[in-house]
Length: 235
Image (tube, rainbow, N blue to C red):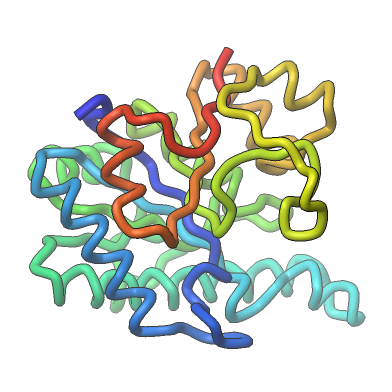
């Protein structure tokens, strides 16, 4: 395997499958099986998952809700998704721990860096819920922050698109895909990979990002094996 320790970033929307909202158990099971293929090969896996399938803090704010209150609701949504993913992983016989940035001791451990790293060393998948624990920060920022803290080799951003394009490939059939691109080129071209805070933090810490299609079976194993799948963002 090319990477020993990875941080897998999943969007909340990815869990919906073909639904309009909520969680698709079949999609969860597919993800769990893909993750098992790499943990069986000794890869240490940490996961950050969004909450957009349940609640969007920004959308709530735009409807008159206080932004801080909305973001806290979004954090709780990521914990719900984390619990669902934890259940699916354990059904696939993968030892798992859920840690949260906000204290919910009855359902998850509080985030403690040393404890998280020890879990990873013991072969447990660690799911980080609750974002950063602070409003105004996205789960992209949480993913990069946690990846740096646990000394991950790479951030794998699993999406429904097979990489980074110069335009939205779902709207523009002439969109061109990049196989490799630098951080500076992403910024110069104004491409949307992650929010600016997360992206800059990744660049400053020389942490590569690979954007790939998580919904295609076997892609996760290919990426971790070093095959050219998706788009790699590096220095």
